[in-house]
Amino acid sequence: MSNERWRKRVLGDRRLAPETLMMGYGYDPFLSERSLKPPIFHTSTFVFRTAEDGKEFFELAYGLRQKRPNEEPGLIYSRINNPDLEMLEDRLVIWDEAEDNLVFASGMAAISTTLWAYARPGSAVVHSGPVYGGTDFLLKRILPQFGVNPIEFPAEGGTKAMEEAVDRARELAPVAALYLETPANPTNGLVDIGRARELADGLGGPEGRRTVVIVDNTFLGPLFQTPIAHGADLVVTSLTKYVGGHSDLIAGGCSGTTAALDPIRGMRTILGTMCDPHTGWLLMRSLETLKLRMTAAAEGARKVAEFLSGHPRVASVWYLGFLPEDHPDRPLFERQCKSAGSTFAFEVKGGEPEAFAVLNRLEVIKLAVSLGGTETLASHPASMTHSDIPHEEQLRLGITPALIRLSVGIENPDDLIADLDQALKA
Image (cartoon, rainbow, N blue to C red):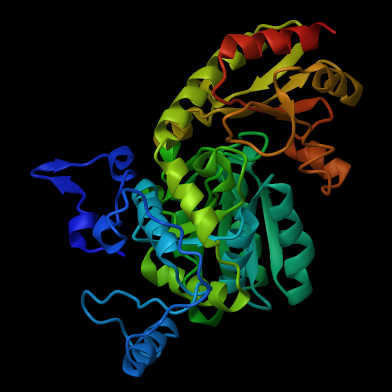
């Protein structure tokens, strides 16, 4: 769908910004009847010009030969490739500062396919905690059924906790991956990606492979954190969240080097976990306003967090922008993150009944899981997104019954403050 003219990232000696490139990067209008926007390629299969073309396309798709210089993969079947998905992947590469990208049917499809591609029976995955509830279930309940050993360390434990977990894993099994969720969901705990890279370089993965560093970047999204720049091999993201950003689709992405993505690409083809063309088209639409939405939401979140931090019925606010100058995570936050983002948690004084009372009285803010949408959402992690985690473990990870997670949207923040104020007064 594209040629080099439509993949230019510079204008003279000026490097074009990502938000500019989102308006058409990778798309040639003259290949689509001069349509300003890409059409939706609703097709299961593609017609070959010749049998020889079909043979060559399949050889490349199935890794039967090396890609020739400047060769573009030929279109075969939408489970393997599709023009909408290829354009979307080109644009996600720009935000993630990566070499390549793959898109999936959901964030969990991206995470699970990535881990299936690297983990092997008898190997270990060292991971931070807490992680998203679905990821936690995959790591602790599903992968062990296939002989994969999860070894957790608390994000709040700093680099020492990660180092100790790596030492335990080293004694147990080859380490397939260091899996980090930073900032953590829902506590905003931070993990040092650079230190994880150093530790991974001293390990060996299964079957002689290199131990990969995988970072779930969903909480800050591609605008406010670029894990690859800090040493990550692979970045997984729930594109449902900020990238989609309108609470009307489900998708996931994985960025990295082409070499690191190759085993995942093959696994995606066989498992069929790819994104569909219509969702890919919707994501391209949303990428055009990503910076505007995320910037507005982050500005609103700071105002809401400042209000909550001074409220007499709020016990604590877990907002990254409030880390004290002498906090051990402060230098890491300043080095690794470009913003505090717009999703954070706060604790009410009391427990679950008091948290539920606040949630039940909200009128402008919606009571729903997910985050990164245009509308503000509130949820109760302990009984919702992280409910499969045992209570004692929840408490160890900082997920208390009084904790409420807030994803601030793009409404007027003063209206959100008024809504929270009336709910808290109840």
